[in-house]
Image 1 (cartoon, rainbow, N blue to C red):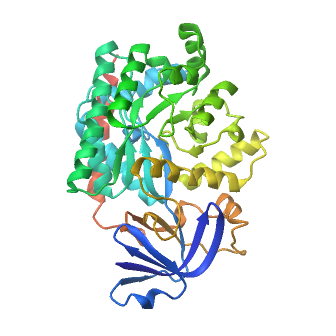
Image 2 (cartoon, rainbow, N blue to C red):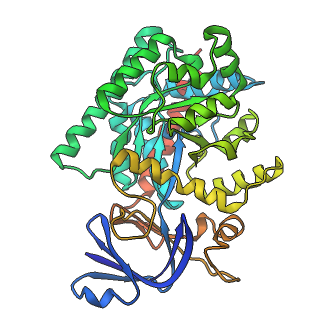
Image 3 (tube, rainbow, N blue to C red):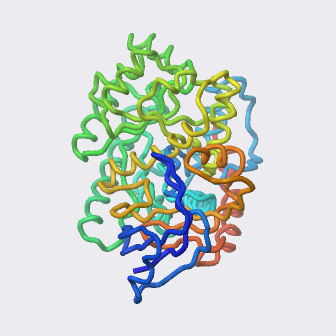
Length: 442
C-alpha cells in the first residue's frame, strides 16, 4: 500500500479542484481519498507531493505507434499533392518497410514518450503489411516494458494483397485478442494491454473484409477501431462503389456498437452521426494531424455524443493536442470553450472502462490508480470553474513530474526507473535502416 500525501486533486468531469488531500492506493486501485488520512495507514509507503497536482491519467484515444521512427525522415518521398498520395508515398511505404526490430523500437520509443508527456494510456492502430503475424504482441511487450496502459489492433486492409492480406490482418486481430484472454486468465503478466479489431479505412476494405471483421468481433467480444471520412475521397468512394454513407455501410455489417472507435470523421453526414450516437459509439478527433494533412475541419464536433481526442501518430502530448484542438476550433468560429475539450480528453477513460471492465477517469475510491502528477505554480487561483483555462493557456507537458499506471509509478521526478539512453541510441540506428528499406520500395 502507498499514499500520495498532500496532493491538489483535479477532477475533470464534473470539474473540481481540492487541495491538501491524501490518496491511498492499494495495489492497482485507489482505496481512499481524503484530508489527513495518511496517518490511518502507518505501514504504507508515503510520497509527499507538497501540493502537486494529481489528475486522472491522460488518454490518447487514437495513435499510430508504427510511425515512431518517422520523425525527421530523410528517405526520398515523392511529391504528395493530396492526402491519398501522402498515404501512398509516405505512410504506406513506411509500414511496408517495418520489421520486428524496427516495430519494437518504434513502439518502445512511443510508449516512453507518451508517459513522459503525462499519458497513462494510448489506444493504438497498427500496420506492418510485411510483418503481420505476431506484430501486435511485439507492441504489447513495448507497452509492458515502459509501463504504459493501452490498446492496439491491426488495421485490416486489402490495399497491398487483396483477400490474402485481409485474412492475415483479421487473423492477427483474433489471435491477439485470444492471447490477451489467456494472459488475463493466467495472471502471469500485468493486465495493461487490451485489443480492438482493427481496419484501415472503408475505402480499403471490401465487403468481404467487412464480413470478416464482423465475425472477428463476434469471436472475440471486441469492438472495431477504424479510420473513416478522414478525407473526402473515402466518402466519395463509398458512394460510388457501394452507394452508402460510410457509417451506414459499417452499420450494415453490424460493426457499430458501444466499443466502436471511429477515427477522424471529418466528412460524416448527419445520418452517419446519428448512427454513431444511437449506437453509443466513439469518434476520435485528431486536430493536429488533420491540419498537417490538409484534409479539412470537423464543424460538427458538438453533435457527437461520445467524442475523444487523439494524435494520429503525432506523438502523445495530450496537453498540446487539447490546445491545438481548442484553438483550431476557435479559428473555425466554433462555440466550444476549453472545458469541453478537457471533457473530450477525459472521455478516453470511458473507452478504457468499456474495454478493461474497470473504472477509470477519477481520483476516487474504486478507480484504477492511473494518475498524472504535475508541477504547476499558478499565478492565479485554480478552481473547477477555470481549470480549462489553466490547461489551455498554462499547464503543458513540461509540467509533468511523475506518472502512475495501475498503481505503479513508472515515471518519477521526470525520470524512468531504467536507463533509456541505450534505447534511443539503438532506435536511431534502426530508423536509418528502416528509411533505407523504404527507398527500395516501389
